[in-house]
Image (cartoon, rainbow, N blue to C red; front, side):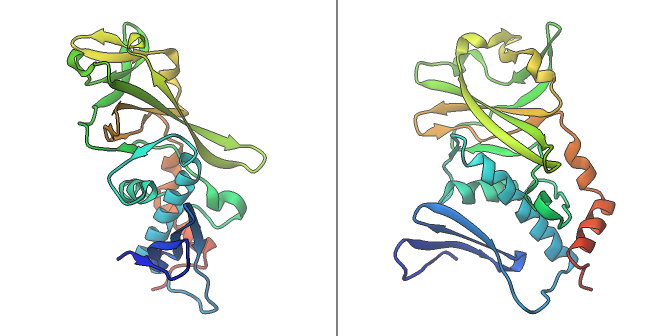
Length: 241
């Protein structure tokens, strides 16, 4: 349940104390903080999984929020993004220095949410060239419709050896698209890059299609194993039985 405080400019949009995180809006800014207590908090496996899920959602949003996005189906863009990101695979990150801010490129990262029909997208090859293949048909084009191409790139910030996803967006002209077998595709050598991912969003005024990232990147998978979970849990003091 949402709560409004009596302090001017402060609106609580969700208490995540069970996950060890509190998130709220203050004067239009998203604030997140770790809940602290002198008592050793419970850390059962379900609690630990949820905390790790929320940690990654917040880490993704910290960079995505600076990109021009459309999340129109919840009270705030963050809540909209977080509700969708909750479906992503859990990555287990040890409590070591800046690694707690690590983020990973993976299929399914939400890039938009709106009322237009979603576009089916996949990476492939067309006429011998890497391509982003879509379900967009010829009738999708009109003078009021735009295409926004989001790019997500997995960086390894060598100074800290920390994985972090960076996001960017540009508008794609319809002239850049190629019409193949009744559908639009976007051809470019960049679509073979295994450290990048993409989402093509259809935008018409205040409406957009709900889209998620497609990518060949597999770096995140080594952080989803039982071994990774056990290592991360140990760094937080172990699990509560």
